[in-house]
Length: 309
Length: 320
Image (tube, rainbow over all chains, first blue to last red; front, top):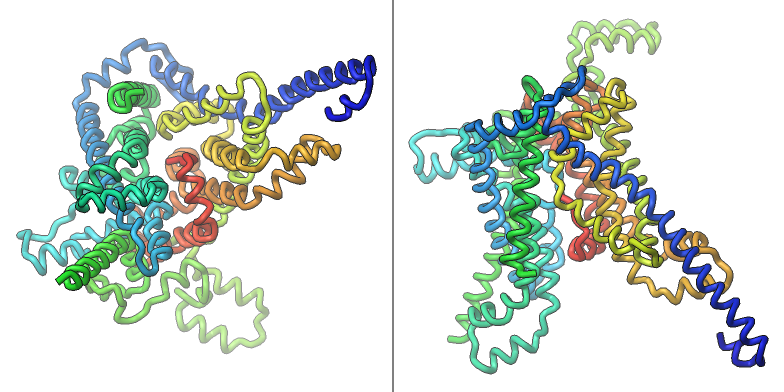
């Protein structure tokens, strides 16, 4: 552009013209290039994520068979599911699971983040060690958890039966549905608190130290500093994590199914319906759709009422 | 008085840190300890084995298994016949070896490795261009693309599983092992693509545009700048995203369990382990050492990218 100022009259206008032309062609080129670079990703995501979701909704109205075609069955799948006591049991199990894992993970993550934000020796090492539960493959840690609660050799029974005599006999905590759900909840908290901790810690590190110093001068104690400085600062990130955690834990499959076959949350119930026994894919699809709409409903509610966006 | 209070405080604090670390590591210690214990030692609540047992690891890694299960008389017989060729010896021994059937760890390991490394490679390659596009170029629909990527967070695996299974069956992919393997690879690529796009996009935005501009004034094309400037500058981020995608694919169970059901040879580690646990060959030391060997590569990879990954996760690039 600077060259234009040195030239005179018509020549300048001509150059300016070509410059404008070049600019517009460059914008066009950018547009074309932009789309062509992102197109493969977009097409693949549309074809293998969006289309399946829509196809799933379609399938939910059919009696699906892998060998023969699908037969239209209208709302039969929906009616059958809504009349099934097991479905409602799965819903209530899922609610218990989601509520307790979300609360537990958030509190454990918040507590850990506050502790890890203080200076102490070996902090770097400790910070990365406690991320391990989040990183390790689910399949590689479930067996260790099963062993902990093993009725014969497990350390849980060793402590609570042999040493503390809290139970009258050895039993498998994972063995019955009523107790297994609590083990599954504890497992999920253990597995996911590092993520919450990491998110909250990065927010805590951004808080201005001067705020705490000023509060101290005004005579605030530990709780007051937490209540009036820390909490408001992390409020947004905590709410966002809670939303994500609810979405993820509502859809959780592996962390429940691989740990115990006795806890039937919605995903597990759907999996068993669709891929074991008579392999009722139509009902499976219907269940997945119902689960999806329950989730959407919750998200809308949460975003409007809690996050107030 | 003040000093005393401080000492109590720091002891309490150290205890708290210790508790958190123990909570996080306890199952791992349990796993490591049990994988090294003999059966008679299982009931012992201490983490330190009375006697170290490496048999399970040797069996899984196929070390020193040649003479296992071979009757002593045969071993003696072989030793007394020096004129047998190596091939003949092997043929005789092969009759007694069936360790592969117990749990072909190395085979499953290779399956997982191939699946995860190729899927992650495809995902990252697509993501480099895709995220460059929406973080650098201006075009209509750009922000819609960018935001659309986030929607994928809401879809659980089970919602996609049934329709994708139906589609791949209809396309005839599921009838052959290779086809199944390819479908799984594609699915893993798609599952990790949104996260890769998001993380790389965030990173590219931190590279000053002026560097690129300078290159383009020098006459480099867009592709030239991506290749010679963007990729070298963000190599650490690309490696991080690659490893993260690799880990997601390595850990995946849901799709693998449905797609590979009838192809035992092609099992990945997660289904292999789950099948082992439900089989008559389930012995704690074998399960725990298999668990250890499944977790170790992931943990090692994680340690190498830990610093970068923490940044990527906290800026929103996550998948669960």
